[in-house]
Length: 126
Image (tube, rainbow, N blue to C red):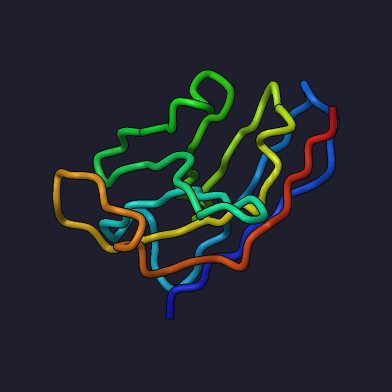
């Protein structure tokens, strides 16, 4: 059974940094073809994709976080990361890790991710 557990959320001031972690169990990064992603949801808003890492290792970011957030994974620890630098108040949201077994060259849509973590809260004050 696939499980994803996020951690690392906190309250920080604008300009600060955080590193979110997503520990995966039930599958091994090195043995299976999984696309992984970070999503976020602010109060009253829809959940949006923030960053993704494809089965071929390529990465993708929403324009609003390019140059400030970096997605990576450590296959030895079976953990996905989101390094967050130069944080802004508009980054305030619940952040979720997600995964999907994937065999296509295209990026999966949000509704195609079928494994989700419980979320970790990031709050950025001005």
